[in-house]
Each structure stands twice: as structure tokens, then as C-alpha cells.
Length: 322
View (cartoon, helix red, strand yellow):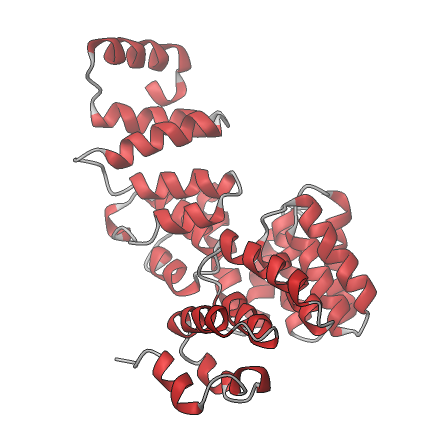
């Protein structure tokens, strides 16, 4: 096929470009070929051309989001999937691709939609599907279910970074700190990935080791300077220290990396409120409450916010639930 034949695909793309005409299917094949080859910048340009076409296929935003996510441009990945394509219009591999990005963006309900009714699949795809199911089980607090799936997958690939990291997350949330630490030790094997370092930071914080927690979070950022969870966590650290300018800096970067992090907007509102920046606090708080109206009850208990805004003010900022 053209997807597996770079020379033929490149020649055909060149002919079409010179002729000033490119079939939409060839745009898609070009995007997939470049993505498979790891040529992410070229793939992004091809995917954007595909998505901009009047007759763009449903998979176009999925390919754009997948490439942006691989490049660490999480906000752009999130934007590409602002309107989810109908999962039933996608091939199984592309539904998995979309679910993987949505899990990375912590859009749990959308990830569930992406895999609903999917399977059974070929072995390589089934492993990805099982990992997504394990992650969603962990998010639902079904730690035994998630760990069962992960342990089954680890039997075949015992050193897999993602599997071990999620195993550590499940154990941490289940309160099994020592076992979680052992699983998260995988972070030492791959310094280019931020996730396990971040969760080591969460674990250290849970055990009251503030200095070790901050060190782990900074290692996460050394691996990926745009990793929103670590940026938010360090913003919270600086907020607790009353270092408001530093807190605002970290939290602003977290929001730039992932605009849908309601918790980051909420912390930013608190930082601005403590600095008596009413307008900035209001803007951040409105966005936090728009993304997660349940934060209202928390806002009503935070002195920095109630000193600037009345209860009526806070309730007015909160969108009414349908």
C-alpha cells in the first residue's frame, strides 16, 4: 500500500502538488505515513491541510490532536478535539488513538465515549484498549479492577513505563505507598518522561516529604516543561509559601499548557485574590466555575475569595446547571 511505501507515496504526492490538485484520501495517507515515520512537524502540516479541507474525513481532528499531543502541544491537542467526532465513524485504531489522547488530556468521560462498545481487537490494539480501560477503572476508584488489568499486561511486558506508572498511581490512590514507590521507581529509567516523576512528587507530598516532593516535581518539568500537572502542583507549592508572583507564573503556564484544568484556574484565582487583584481573581474564578461548577462550595470556604466576593457574587459567577 502507499502507506507503507514512502517512495511511491512521495512521488505521487509530488505529482499531485505540481498539478495543483490533491485527493483528500491522499492527504490522509500522507499524514498517516509521516506520523508513522515519526516526522511529526511534517505530519502536523499535512494533518492541518487535511482538517482544513471542505470534505475532511471525521478522523482529521484525531490525527491533528495525536500529532500535537506527541509534540507536547497539549493545549492545541485539546483544541483539535473541542468537538469530538462520532466514534462510530472512526476505524478501531483511530478510536484508540483518540482515546489515548483524551486520557492524556484527562478528559475521562470523552475517553469512555471513544471506546464504548469497542472490541475484541487484534492483539496489539487490544493491549492499548485494555490499558485505557485500566486507566478509566482507576479514575473511577476501581483500583482492584485496574490493577488486575495492568498486572495481566505487565506479565508480557514487565518493564513498560506506562503500565508501571499507572500501577503506581493505582497503588498510591489505594493508600499502598511502599508498593506505589516501587512501581514508580521506573521514573529513574527514563528521564525523558514526566509522568512517573510527577506521581513520585504526589507520593512524597502524601507522606509529608515536602522537599522530596518538590524535587520530583522539578524533575518532571525538566523532562517536559509544559507538563501541566507538575506546573499546577508547583504553583500550589508556591501559593502555600505565599510566594504569589511565582505561584501566578506556574499556574499561568499550567493553564497555557491545558486550558481545561479547572483546578489550575481555581488556584490562580486564589493567588490573585491574596494579592488583592480583584479583576484577575474574578476572571480566573469565573473560568474555574465554568469548567467545574462544583468548585463553588469550595470557593465559599476560602477566606481569600470570600474577602473579595460576597456569596451572591460567587453564586452569580457559577453557571446554572441544566
